[in-house]
Image (cartoon, rainbow, N blue to C red; front, side, top):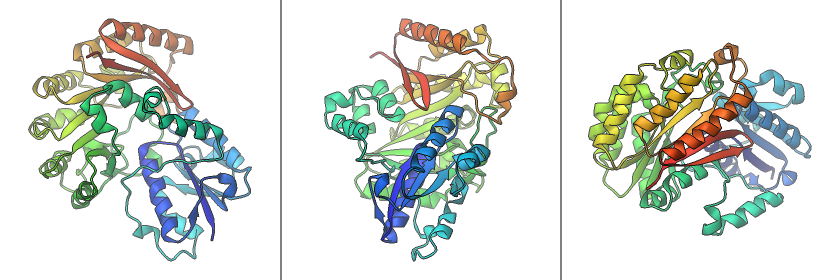
Length: 417
């Protein structure tokens, strides 16, 4: 019996992919091991959406090659950093859009990968050989210490944003994730992953509802809708995102739904539909990826630029649905951003006065339109703006945390209660 070690570093979609790969091997009677040095095959599901993240993934590839096991590099790295990966690795790869190709690497398997359904629970990395991982798991056993532990971007963001509230409790029960679509219809100038995740394709609405009902039957109460372009749902099959939400929230039961990183153009387009659906109080949290309130910057980003309509829609949500937890995302220091535009971003946050959000400093990505834009904001100036933003946000009544990890850094802020 061959032994498989799985490791993933990336967005939640990649964690769902890894869970599906894990189930594929379990169905074919492989042993899933918790140590890479016990494995016959190591499968590393990668991310490369920023240069720093790609560097982390490439270094991890080098690390995994030291083990006496065959390495398969999966995820977005093989598409986004094909040449850099080829410089250090000449083995098998598994692109995000070609997961079915895994069958060609294991031709004796009886259960086809196509028979393994899309997953709803995130894969969890486990490496009992790592002292750090053991230490982290020990910390997580203490509820008091866990609140201080900054182990993942998702957990620290929501712990910081919600604090000890019923909403916090709901969000941190084990979540049931429903991937509503694959790919993205957008063309953001700074995005390095679009060609790695493939063309946009919605999951059939009946399948989404089936998964939702399955989660309810298993006792889940917190549902998270996952997608690279969640608001575009259904446009490729004569449906719409509001139709999906309408059908989900009509289903009786005690549950909550979180929608992450909705594009502001979808908010503008569907604001009236959202109002009627959200009144049912089944959707408790909505993230809006505004990125910038400056039309000039938004045009350079290749994003929806009618910021007045965006602001109007955001304020309508806040006014008519005060119990809805709302957060916004912004990119700070995009190439050519002036100091006045930076200050306008902070004023926009103040005017909107949403419960929480984050400011992410612009990070370059090779082979994107934004890479060619000049002038770039210097590291020194970026740090200066971050420091100013932190003071500004505190002054207007937000708690602020500067969060760093090997693959990201950003300011988290939430409104004091």
